[in-house]
Length: 294
Image 1: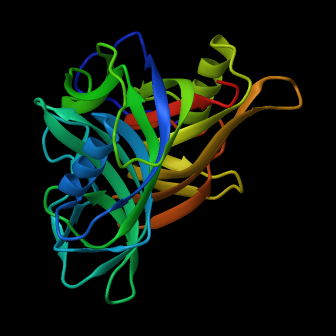
Image 2 (image 1 turned 135 degrees about the horizontal axis):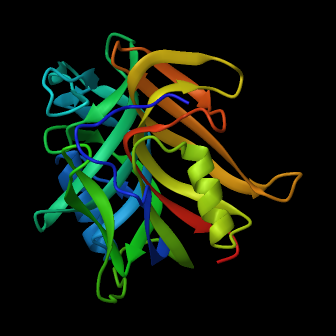
């Protein structure tokens, strides 16, 4: 399996998880504000400081994004590209968001796929405090209680990354939400060089989870190998999970099926179902494992 060497020492624990309570929500992001403010407003109405969600439809303006890139210094193994800007209204196809806290304030991590005015379909890492919501966007996901995703310095990668942390119990009591209580779930952050599918399968096995959905899903892998045999050779990528689930296989063991869209550092966009055992995490991966029997 491919491997990435980061500047810091690797911690023994490669999967950090925190149990939490979640509520399913369906809401819409109102136009006329930045993506960050639109999500923060929606989550404040719902009553949660952290969430994972998927966005679809609608449009964005003042569009600013970056892509994964090679690092120009020894401080990081990989890095971000320069900021790219698109003139005109961009149509959002899909995005995945981790929403949490940075320095005590709302923040989010968003990877998206979109269509530009020129007709080009592209993918990348949105700059949420610059991109403006131009047309209403549908947001569906899980509002998190009793825990938060908190941006925390990571010694291994030398980045500050979302990490799940416990908080004091708090009830979700928004007035305008459309939500359904779901019970116990698990916030997860995966470290570099663990296979995405295998790590989640092992986690479910250890926790007695026989079936689960993967909610949210923002992260990166060292290139990619798809289930149908296609290979993404450029090794610096960022991706979003379009759909993910874990079910028991014929052998009675958990098996993950993860459908993604990714962009590599050369600008190539690829999509499909990831091959199990062939896709190590590059820098980080954030998601929620939602047991179906919770």
